[in-house]
Amino acid sequence: MANGSRQAAWEFFGTELKRRREDAGITQAELGLRVFVSGGYIGQFEQAIRKPQLDVAQRIDEILQTDGFFERLWKKLIKEQPYTEYFAHVVELERLATEICEYAPTVIPGLLQTREYARAVFLAGNPLATDEYIEELVRGRMDRTQLLKDATRPVYWAVLHETALRIPVGDAGVMSHQLDHIATLLRERAVILQVLPFAAGAHPAMGKMMKLMEFEDAPPTAYTEGMLSGNLLDEPAVVKRVRASYDHIRAAALSPEATLALIESVAEDYRRCASTA
Image 1: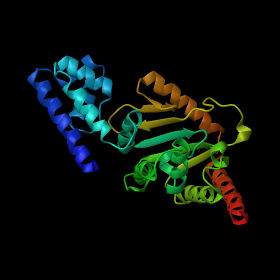
Image 2: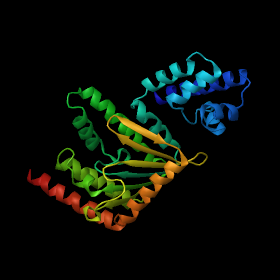
Image 3: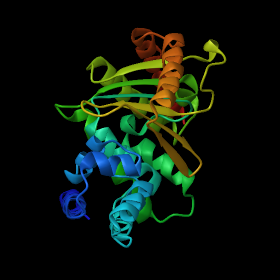
Image 4: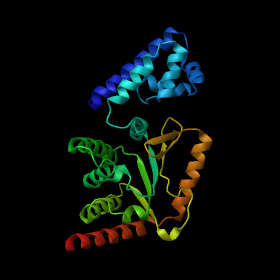
């Protein structure tokens, strides 16, 4: 389903939600209270600005007595988009965010990946997949990277552990190109990036990725990910703790200037390896 068609389908979801809510004589604030989100969120669902999670769609069905209508529609829309169910909401929120901060312990974050690096990551995770399937995954990843090229792009601040620079994903040529790409983004001031060096030792999120997103008219959200699973966290106290962990990591990381020098040095090491291969 094309992006325009998918958006139109979510607009239908929102229109139906508004119609059925009003038919039931329930305000946005009242419905939000009963399904455990704010009334403002209900308004954003109705305008197709934000997409509800499955459990919210199920609770809406229960409150509005719509016999599973919103759950079925949600599942159809999620099935027809190119991202796994647990990550689809993150992609939508990235497009709405005014600021994205993330920590990557082992892999270059998706928003910074080159096509070749992304392909190597997907091949490693899907060793028996067809070329067509891998290419579909790569296209989805590359679509996401366009976010950082938009004039209205969010502020993007990432901290990469040095491990992410040193693990050879693909061959040396792939890695040198990937690191050159990041260095270009840094020099163009399109992103803010720091590297947490091996010398920093233990830190609050060892082995754990995290993403924090800020919005103009909605509370901040945190995202963490495990094996074939992801967690969107919007409880204020929990998000505050994630932010504190991120801030500690950021404080221990190299400065952006030292980070650029390190990335350029590691890229040159990979380039020498590629030339002698």
